[in-house]
Amino acid sequence: MGLSASSVIFTPDKEAMIGFSAERKDIYNFIVFENYINLKAVRQVNAEVPSKSEVTLNAFVRIRDKNFLVYSQYTKSSKQTTVYVNEMSSSNVLLGTPIKVLTVDKEKNKIYGDVRVNASKNKKSILIYQATEGNGKDPRKMTCSVVDENFSVVWQNDFDFKMPEKEADLKSVDIDDDGNLYALLYKGKEKYQKASVFSYNWKIKNFAETVVGNPAEKAKTYGCLLEVVDGISPVVAGVSLADDDLSYFVVSFDAVKNTSRELQSAKFAEKDKALLVTKKYPEEGLAVQHILKTANNNFVVSFEVNHVITLYKQTSSSSDFYSGSVFVVSVGANGVAWSNVVYKRQTVPVNPFTTSHSLIISGDNVLIFYNDKESNLAERADESDGKVYRGSSSALVLRKINSKGEMTSQKIETGQPDNFGINPRYFVKISDTLYHTQLFATTFSKFACAYATIELN
Image 1: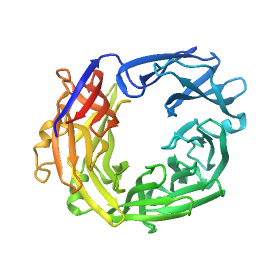
Image 2 (image 1 turned 30 degrees about the horizontal axis):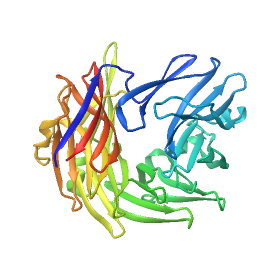
Image 3 (image 1 turned 60 degrees about the vertical axis):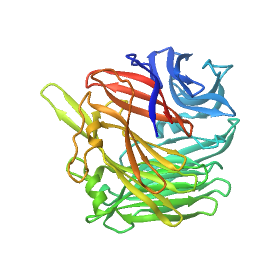
Image 4 (image 1 turned 180 degrees about the vertical axis):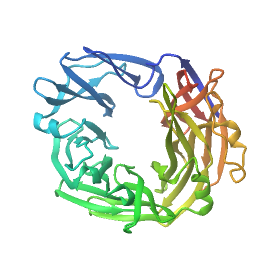
């Protein structure tokens, strides 16, 4: 497999990135990509908003081949929040007038935090929700509204998890294609916290709880991720620690039947644990990063240790984001199909562009993109703990794992500027052989960004 990063355009413009920035009180500036595909055509759209309002851009949604911007506007005088959608043309021009979706009244705004938006995989159900954001004795609550592809409200409900906020940490929220809700919470005190999935089937108004992970009294469940991977089957993967036994689990759910099924629960093999967990990469930082589904209906899950180290100086401080090896496992109806460890050692300054690895399904292969010191590709993991890169010494790397779990490695030539390291932000799949990505070339004091096409030949 040959690899190249073509049409790379590096620019020192800090605003040339996907994201939002409020530069003036009366203008909200944000940048989107033409058709969500051509990452080389960057445009800026200015949306005028009342000066006495606070606007938050919540999501971009593509429905029926049309682009829509979802945003919420908080009005100081009424203390209400109104959620709007506005269609955008293929050239990113706002069309017509905004559509008012719903209003959050003053009383709810006193209780709940920011508006958040999740769209189902088929884009026919859009979840708009708020949750309490405290960490005290008040109960953890969430208020939800689901709208359809015409932005009409399908259902609304408030949920009280009957636990104080300090013992109910909301970690993941998602929605399936039928508009059913899933929320993952950590329960109890941190030392022995448990993980529960709360599911809500809106058609029969059933709100159910399922405990996932190791239920033992002195076991801790953490590092979990909940994803409705294919729009149908919600999946939760995570880590459990009991005494010195470090294990992982993968569970799938059926909201219609109100059932769950454990696809896999096993200890990390000692050889894998030795690569994942070291003094610099402690086990408490181990967490699920991605859950994907293959063409043969296996779930591919990646686990990785991430943590932040802050160095304090007399007049300033700086933080480094450390990211270690990746344990990748493919789980099917009959258990583990294969597993492998991607040996890597990353570190970058903590900033809005911090990322670790991107996981992509391409045909029968699993592709893992990340940045690392190039020499680590040649080192044997059992002989060295690896050297983290600093500043300008990183490269864009691909690891390919085939359907048998066999792995190959390759550096991708990006044409990055001299004395800059490379840091991938995200990958967008266009076809099985073509991907678009946003790259950041960084030193510890400067950065430039690029929009690149990655073609798998």
